[in-house]
Image (cartoon, rainbow, N blue to C red; front, side, top):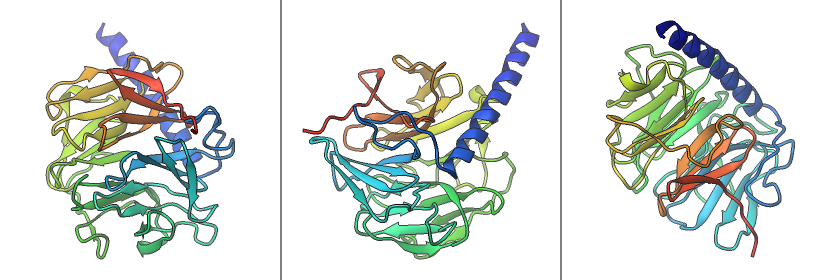
Length: 306
């Protein structure tokens, strides 16, 4: 029994390594998306989705960050509007509680744009810091009031930085322990110094802004791919692994499976976010299909223009 469990975990580990590698390679090059959030695909075949985000100052609006553009979608009418310059890549895209947009990524002019900010809902952008760095993941600590903005840069220039003044200045987080390569970072929306990090070895929690980490014992050696913290309900965290989707409503003390309606054998959710207005959870698969979790069930999110 123990030998079978060990073999299964080894197989899962290598399967997830392959998943992570294929995902991050596709994140930096044109993809072959076959999915979308509409009857007509939201992204063309050469494109793929990096992130979904919701603006607390604009209820009923979803922003889709892709490899080539940023798109605004009115969820009531289905109308779409492409923002910014076509060809810009929006990795790590997040929206702060005050409506400010932050992102990293690439552009035709600059290979790695560092950290940039938009004060006009994605129409124009300014570089704040770290030009030449590629931040694959960014997160904001509060959905109602901007406090800390965190950004994680991948190898070869791997750093973890934070700003507590709307991006005017940035400090590198001095990590006092090694937890392995991080693939996803999520800030707790009610506790500005609390962070969740996922990697091949499980889920890690920091209570001091990323300096020290504690591994969630129940998820040891279970690769964590995506994380979202509920912006309204304190203690509610949702994660995806290579095998299932789990949710905790007590700050990670216990976990329940919430995978009904989603076929994990055919797809894997690589990005999660929560709408702060409706508390609906949205997930993006590797092939850029979008799913929504509501009424305790996942379903593909289809949008029809009215």
